Image 1 (cartoon, helix red, strand yellow):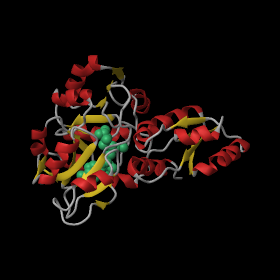
Image 2 (tube, protein in one colour):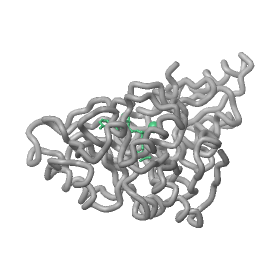
Image 3 (tube, rainbow, N blue to C red):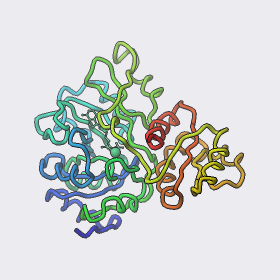
Length: 321
Ligand code: TXA
Ligand code: MG
């Protein structure tokens, strides 16, 4: 299959492909998605094949209009609307009870469904021009999530007919996932919207008890892995690890915060910028750049607070053997 890549000029064609049961790679503010009509079982099945995704890992349904939530979910609690008000459209996914309209292939057999309202204008236009869209990140399972169209293209070329290029993703890591189907709201995946922020809005007025933290089903898989060796070290150990890697004949690179890089001097490095939000925006981009040019990636261990916590959640998996 030939894969077309282009910008807004391909939007109409992309909408037709979705309506006819095909796949489209599209930009969101978090990472690129690999979308299909969420109501079309066959189309959704082909997502799993294209990215070699395990069958038991459910997909998120992307919507453009609040009203549509009632087409895909039932018993929607008031807290959903409070979260929508504050964060949507934006990098948040809410797990709700699924409606009968959503096929089980989307939810991997579960009675719940993830709902997200992306803010990227191309994502919104694609959904508005076609249908609610079921989509995972547009990478091959296990590989690094794409924050540029070209990264999605490299993983999926020959497997999808069309890639919509909407520029670089501004958030850079996947949406925060919060599950509202249990006794207490529970964060299943941290993101740019932090636990601290959610704790505030999910507080005592909405639910008794604390905000919980658990793992999304997909988080048990090996993930976010670059194609070469990748380790994580404290800021103070980076120089040493780099020297050791050189000695062993590797071509190493350090991925670290701007502050640390300034201290390291002229070792080869890629910057994660100056804040947690910068680190989120650049993390996958730097992993892609690093695996293209180097063969040994050393990631700085960052503090596990705020958005850095969410970046570290991904970084630990990238650096796991
Ligand atoms: O930012 C994002 O969320 C991106 C963009 C494309 O929207 N999407 C994304 O999808 O990251 P994916 O498939 O790579 O990750 C979805 C995660 C998986 O860990 C999956 O297990 C979890 O969401 N998930 C989906 N539906 C769920 C459900 N009903 N219950 C619990 N977890 C669910
Ligand atoms: Mg993914």
